[in-house]
Length: 282
Image 1 (cartoon, rainbow, N blue to C red):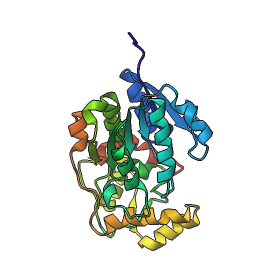
Image 2: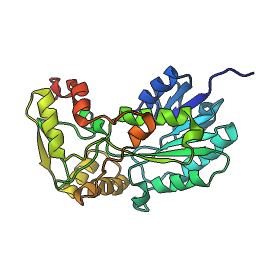
Image 3: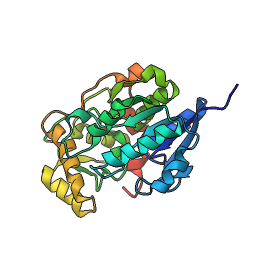
Image 4: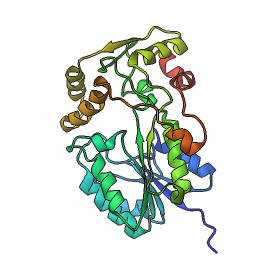
């Protein structure tokens, strides 16, 4: 009898969800193998196929995070999934995006979902998270000089805690047969405006925080000038455009459905993360 623990390969293993997922799996009897360009258990680079086979050796389940800051990657992912299937991977949990089926055709999110659905040798689960709360505590949507700057036109989004995404991913990798073929839209319990976010951060940090609703194209142009790849503009335009149009994420309850506990509120996240906004660097 083989009593060896199953092994899960976690792409983006040093990222916001991957690092948390690795900890949760390790605590619950699955061996996590984090993979990233640096700082992980194994080196993995989407643009270096020589790193792929070693990362997959002995793995039977996979947390799939596609290349970052790109919109065209379906062929790369398909080749990797072919290799994964041949190496013995039997389940894939894919980190997609909220409303991925509504993404512009230029973005390969839905194409990867379709690829997974077409494969008969592996099962899969799709996670479609809303905007992540951690955006406000790192370099994505930082509080700079007491101001959050982003386009929204007053629209709302059910921001989700990365820890809740990791918790759902853990359940799908622990019991693939239970979650095979499922798609979960992962949100927080409240649809909030950016002004609500600013007010909550101000309250927990004890410092003034305001929200500046910038023109969408001006915001995108600023990101491109700061080094974001030009073709990624279509992704930024789609994600912000949904909020501007009033079609941002709305609470779904899928986190509680999968984990058995309520999704984290932004207030709870902010209290846990207050140090991010009270340091002198901010």
